[in-house]
Length: 233
Image (cartoon, rainbow, N blue to C red; front, top):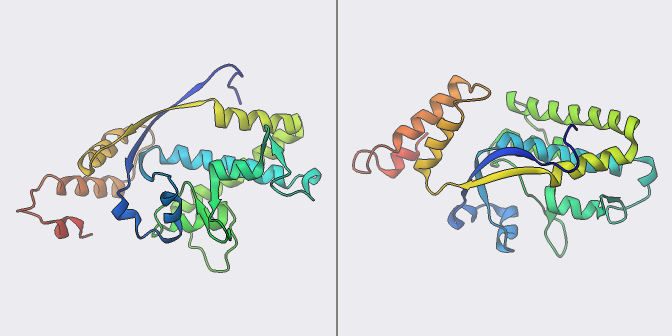
């Protein structure tokens, strides 16, 4: 909100590791997007920032869609900053697999075996779902972020109208600057994670210990610990 219109905000370093095609073969509903030309990455550092931005973009889209003036309009008819909500969703949130458009693939998320994955999809992005969604310490953060942004957008609209919402969306999508660093191998991933997270919000002892143990396994040669031993939880 404090960012001037003609300025950019440096939002830090994103550390990424490309996902091998062999690993993405089991991604089921997501694989079609990779086959269509997208490249998949694991986020080594920057996940909290990307999660925050994704939730905020989603809540802006949802807020604008639910305005009374847009009640009878489709996503192709509602425009925000000269883009339709359909285009914004496709660019920042999710895409539907053609031609039937029955499968939705999210551009940013968690591994499917992470409880936060279901929570982000069904509680934050609000994809229809009839099953139960488990809540954890981490999903509480997602819940809080969603509720916080909804409250902020209501207050912003009350004071600045749709111009205030558009101004926020413009800054979020066009005025934040990242450096992107692609990490080559698993050894560097664990070293980078441990180094970069020894600052900012303190990690839990469990997170530190888990990463430390994973890192230590990379120090052993295959004659001491074979690949099966290293992968064993």
